[in-house]
Image (cartoon, rainbow, N blue to C red; front, side):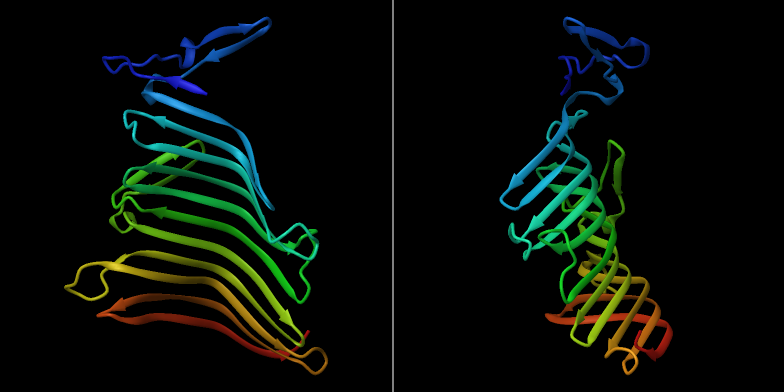
Length: 272
């Protein structure tokens, strides 16, 4: 825990650089005070934490605190986080594992803003083995960004940070990930790969009207294939170099969609 609170005149202690102080905490042990006065008032706690609830667990290195003159904003940082969710404790159940979670979040009376990133997502049976008749490939580079405060928000917490100064990011929620997915059942299998993004943000959809909330779905470097049957008699249709964007919104009380998708490659081959 670190505490460096302002005096009545707003000043704080500065132990940074050569002004650090070593304070004895017992026989043969000491703690170094090296708080930087440039950070202003500080109240911060950090440590490694693991929470377990039924078949779920969340662990990682967390930092929670209030820094600077804004005592009404809580800063939360996470590094090396892991999250496990399971439908039960048996090998026949399904388990979702998310690893290498890191992020930065600000919370105040107007809402929350932050960014969370996960290195890898894996879906297996309860024992960590592959699911029968349903095969998930890699889901990597997952990023979640959000701002519900309705105003600009910017922060750096530890090694993570975000900058939502642009007006379009004053009220938004976005998810993106590199997806590698294979679904199979019987003689039919389907694959989907690419960088997908889904964002909710305000947009001006018609000239002369006010901005309204809309969903934007994007795809980069996409490829997909549908296979029916198996070698030597099966067939496979493949689409590659998929790029596109789709806007989903409500206009005058009616749902509407607009977008484009380009297909760079089309192939028809025998099933592998």
